[in-house]
Length: 190
Length: 190
DNA sequence: CCGTTCTTGAAACAGTCGTACCATAAACTC
DNA sequence: GAGTTTATGGTACGACTGTTTCAAGAACGG
Image 1 (tube, chains in turn blue, purple, brown, green):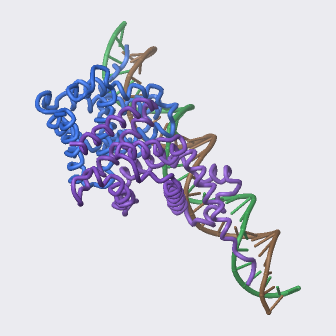
Image 2: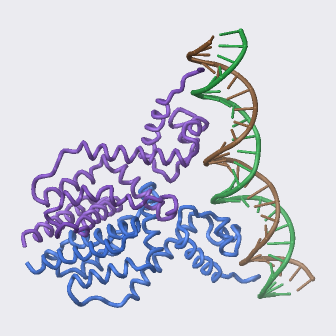
Image 3: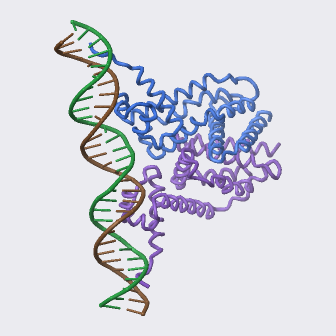
């Protein structure tokens, strides 16, 4: 049958390519420098992925997979007051380890605004986190089908992440989150 | 003295270039297509702006100027409850007219994350809106030097804008803002 | 050995990019 | 008219892009 195929090679390349994209971003990505950084050749990247577009899609899927894996391996925070759960999520999201993922998220979002046609399933951007978040904050929601509260919580988290990455002022962001936690707690107490 | 200079030409070009960037984004910007769309030549763009980098800087400055002008010409909303003022700001920010500016803001933010060295004055990203917002919501702040509350309000606005541009679900975003307005109002009442 | 299949390198192709060079036309002063 | 300054087109350079083509090496089955 001839020389056997090596599907593991593609996986190894994908893993290292994802590292590279998380470290250097998507914007300036180009096959020749990427190949050099990965100790391979542009020829092999195309051999394994078909085209740059498919490579990028595979890298983004891998990055999503990694983010989900890290989220799953996070210490469970189901208990406590809503304020404590909020603090836990924020601490996890804003940790320096997550910075590459946050950066990539904002970069993809910006690209989506420029080329919506490349992201036909952007509705899935909601469902991914919606169930998790509405379950975690069910006790501060107003009734069963309250989508406003989880949306607001996610907006606060994303908005503060944007502020944090923009200004680097972690202290102010932390205090703003604390303020929101107070507001949520006061509403439950009322 | 020779042929007189025509400084108005540069202004005209800058205005049209800003239109183009607001309409098509910064990412794919390139001199030849831009010149074609502006009925001029790449030669003239460099003649007027020196380099592409300076052109982009001028366009971003012009876009900021336009945004500030629109903000200034907005109907004043100083009175009313905090919830009403919040609704007013959100309605203004999320209006379709502002969409190009919002898109450009997120695009610049993503570029800043990739190339922080190009944005040495990113601390100014705070001061621009901080005074305005802390004045508008002084009555829901906790004391004089409370920076957490304006930061939180801005985070909610930006986070909801991100959600809105990502999912297009205006109704859900509106209801989430309403939820936040309730939380703010309840806190003042307590 | 032969033949087949997978793997890989080197080079080239056609295109775009920002920019620089060179020439020339236009409008002005004297 | 000459001289000077501004404005503009055309063109080419070098670097880069994703991709293709051609060829050869490597590992296996028969």
